[in-house]
Image 1 (spheres, rainbow, N blue to C red):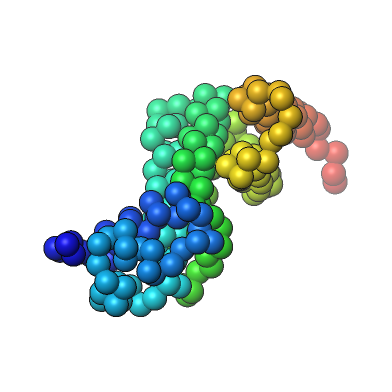
Image 2 (cartoon, helix red, strand yellow):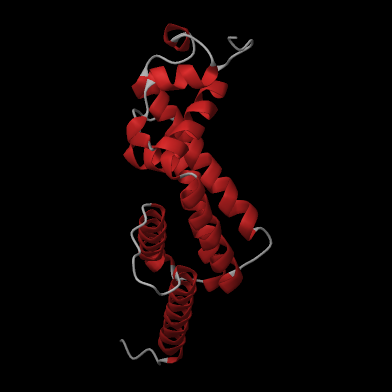
Length: 206
């Protein structure tokens, strides 16, 4: 029987669950309608079409990813925040690879697109993971790009079954996060030392 009280949000949730099962490239209005127990034309009362639905999935995915990282790192900083946040993102991508793929394929349609806010929430979550390292503001964007590249790459490869060597992938992930942690600590120490050196140097400019 058709579901009573169906909403755009409920359609999006159902479609997101579907693409997690079958892959984002298999998204189709007919499949979503079948999942919801309604006729395909009824979907158009809630979304304008498949492009709109894919965009809604992307917004949902980024908000959920941001929530997962936020919850994992709350009250933590430095190494612990990095480790927990990285694992949270890895788990989210592994468990929700279809909706995450939708997010990677989406682009904002304008300045008021809610996708922008959702993406910014993820970036803010990454920044919070790095907060305890006291990174020089001039270096912050580089650290964020590094973190995004590494986490996205590892999680996406794992979700796609891209690691074929016998070595345990959990061990590799732990090694990778430790490597990043040590690098960030070294960067912070170097920046602090440079700043102290500049402060201690006498001003000989006349």
